[in-house]
Amino acid sequence: MSKVLFAAAEAAPFYKTGGLGDVSLALPKALIKNGVELRVVIPYYKKLFPEQYRSELKDLMYFQVQVGANAKYCGIKTLKLDGVEYYLIDNEEYFGRDGIYGYWDDGERFAFYQLAICEMLEKVNYIPNVIHCNDWHTAFIPVLLKDKYNWIDSYRHIKTVLTIHNIQFQGVYDPVILGSLFGIGTETFDEGSVEYYGNVNFMKGGIYYADAVTTVSPSYAQEIQTPEFGESLDGILRDNSYKLQGIVNGIDTQVYDPATDPNIYSHYQVDDMTNKLKDKHALQKSLGLPQVDVPVFAVVSRLTRQKGMDLLLDSLNDFLHEHDAQVIVLGTGDPDLEDGFRGYQVAFPDKFVAAIEFDVKLAQQIYTGSDIFVMPSAFEPCGLSQMMAMRYGSVPLVHSVGGLRDTVKPYNHFTGAGTGFGFTDYRASVLSKMMNKAYDLYHDDPKAWQKLRFQGMKQDFGWQKSAQKYRQLYQELSE
Image 1 (cartoon, rainbow, N blue to C red):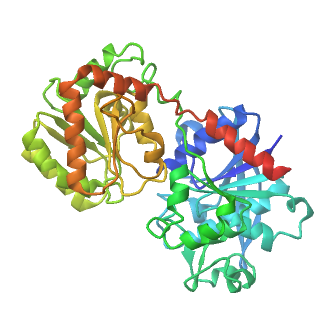
Image 2 (cartoon, rainbow, N blue to C red):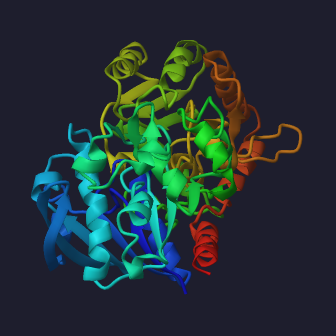
Image 3 (cartoon, rainbow, N blue to C red):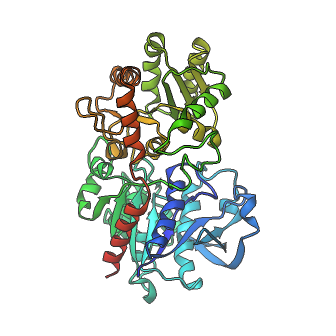
């Protein structure tokens, strides 16, 4: 049986800024159910740690971690939740902040974190067969195991997996950190395995030194090997394509279940959708929209250009003028995009709502109360919202890239097959055309619409299949 340490910078339900937090909650649980011995390590962000779990935290030990010439305190806390044992790495200087990312010393903060993970293995008496690293915050662990800690006998058999959740974020810093933080020489830099335009790149080092590299959908695994999507690491990924594969993320189908979700107004399931209309009217009422049976288009997203929100803004004016429909946008992001959506709410108060906020409960109510869920992302490594939308019977309309292409099957007008609407030509006029197509199907052919929604709800987006693929990968590496 594989013995795994799953290392990430965040994990729900403790803290989450995006998909990484969701994955770090759901995948470990699924792996344990599949017979993998696994523990999770995350930082202890003291100010962000939920009050409801504080009483369960136990202080395991503390020791010093050498960060360059400086000895830094490292505490190890532990707790067990839903069958998963967690290690939380404590250091007030690095992690006692109001946020997780975006600080001038992030390089040093996550250098300490990765050193602490390597240092703790023998101390907590948990030597895994595999360390599963996630994104740049842990991507240098494979480098450290080969370069700094290769003299430790019990570490020599440890294999590493690096999962790339978003290649856009890489951890690029001045090469002085090799000595001043990690306490290693410049060999890895001189030979080019961590060097990146004169700097050190955590992600590049992980790609070279990890025994296996995964990403969060098969299509994204292919896309990041091209200049268009590779963020200047496409050549490195092509060189290492022999150990790269895409394994699509899943969602927690127990949490995201319209039959039991405590956040929604009325419950329903795929074989009896009666209450979905009640949820729709309740959503409309709560947001001040007329409670009428028109198609409700919805967005739950960061309001950024990467998420295609500029495309959506450019599509809305004609669409709202020409169609008896409603559009709901929930999220925060770029100020100019936020202002653009606010402007539509002023211009179309009976048709458009801009909820410029982050509200988990409202998000669930939008999934269940909407008819069409719009995700026009410029790129999308995997995406979870489209799977959640289908789970709640909202038909996704997506730009067919990355995980969106892998999880949403475009509607076929002739056969009725498919689970949503997809477009490949990334232009506002094309997005408008697809919104018109969804609108027309909803109005003109209710039977076909119900079938399309049914087909989406029947999809299995649980973690079982993906967990089995990771378990197989761990076993292959451990042999």
